[in-house]
Image 1 (cartoon, rainbow, N blue to C red):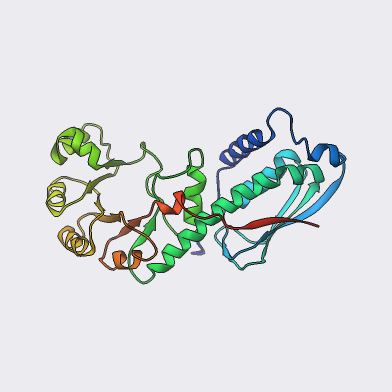
Image 2 (cartoon, rainbow, N blue to C red):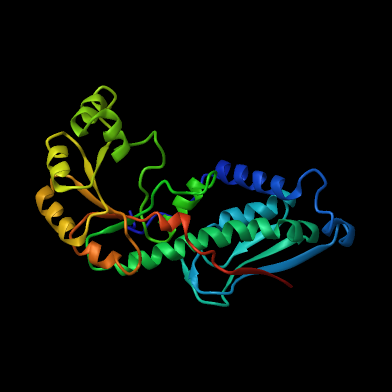
Length: 286
């Protein structure tokens, strides 16, 4: 083995399905009523995708698939890879094909690529802010409906890690579960019936007494929710490495370093996917 990191990849069927839905949304039943009358059907063209601002790229496969969905013979040649930081003005890719396809797919391609690159860029900023600590930056389920797999992919491209993908792949006992069940003990006892040996269990706690109670059960992680710095330090000391510690709530680029320095293992940040500004990109005609 070379020891090189694995190449970031998206499952092709997910890409094709998402692109088809996006193009259907844009084209409707009438198609591109601007491009088609102006451009002859056999005219060809070449264009470049350029970054107007610096950032980390994610979503090139989706951009390529957008053009190829309308012109299977289109040539999409990427100059960079997902996960790469580029400077303002950098060329990301060249695309050649039928002019109609390039014009019609332009917005779909840039919507995917700009949004996911924005997620990757914001993630990279958080990762840089905690460099030198043991804390890892993780995303949440606060994602755009229909785009979760891609947004979580973009988090990985930015150097972050994924929390659970959905309600099906890990058990996270949150405050409302505890309230509905009548307490932490009641909730965790009921989970034992359904908890397979490969399923992780995490419990959200707001106070140190709740943490002490949760640690009496065979759990894998604790989510330390909206705790101040002093309480977080006490919580990490109380856990003493027995389970993973995750800090959540009140996290931003100004606070994340101090949170990381408490010794928590993970810091989950909803803003990575629900508030990332889009990276400014353009398709420039050649």
